[in-house]
Amino acid sequence: MAVTREPELSRTLSANADGMLWAMLDQSTDCVKLVNLDGYLEYMNANGRAAMEIDDFSGVAGTALTSLWPASSAKRLSLAIERASKGDKDRFEAFCPTAKGNDRWWDVSVSPVRNDGEVSRILISSRDVTDRHLAERDSETRREADISARQDRIVAGELAHKARNQIAVITALTRLTLRGDPALEDGAKRLIERITHLGLAINALVGTEGKSARLLEDIVSAVLGDGDGSGPVMIGAIPPLSLTENDVRTMALVLGELHSNALKHGALSHEGGSLVLYFDPVPGGVRMRWKETGMADCREPSQLGTGSDLIRRMTMGQPKAGTFEWEPDGLYFEMIINASSPPPRAG
Image: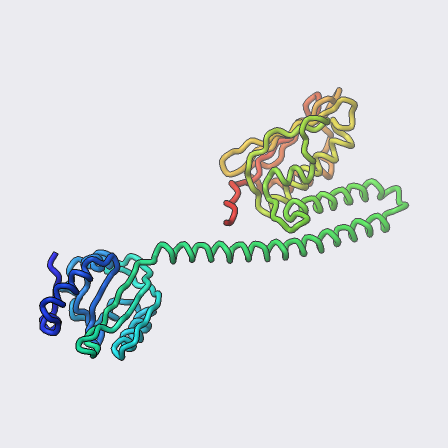
């Protein structure tokens, strides 16, 4: 492709120097430009036109180079051209999209071109550093996200610590207030159990080190333990799903209520009784199946107890509210709770 040259520039340079200059500039892999002392574009090498996605150089030849740059960078370029016109070199990095609007970042060097000792033209070389810039920006974004996450964990840990202390105070006050009153003793125990379940939910949301723990597996482990089958409680494979803060509280309280009931009145209160818990992913959530076995004659109560009623009300907003079936050998409970794939770890 022929290079457009201004007649004045051709007259300024000798024939031999002219040929050597164009050959040298055309070999450069950078975007190389020559402008006059007022900053008007006179030449751009072939690689530069390709890098800037300029199909027809004649459309930009003779225009102010700064007019091709966004306002955020044009001022810096104008300053560099002014310095070069006085014989000084300059270098900077700046953003300038291509002629077709694609984002690019450039490492720009600006130097005076002398003729007989006088500055006659200005040479501007721009190297595409977009990949490096984007990598540094992504790294900085990740670093800021890590700092923010650490700060959030610290704040969450402090709040959780305060909440646990408040729960401990409420539990102690409940015991002191209702102690010695046989009529309220059972209700007091149930209230303390539910407060304890709430504490477990807080532990599931924020661990002892302030780390977020909203994975379903973490919540189940916080309330029920491992359930590896060596004891009366067996927990099947738990899918890697996460819950929202509200759903963590719901899951923790539901598991706590079911477990307390199984220990006091259900299968785990009988010799040889056992519990199996399954979780199956479904679109938009996870199905929980709770099956107790080992009871001789399990019957449906004439009316739901306070714990069962609490579970029913708490799960009404879920994809499938909790349902109870009293099978001959033990309780079967099922619900579907909102769940989603966990977000990727930062960094």
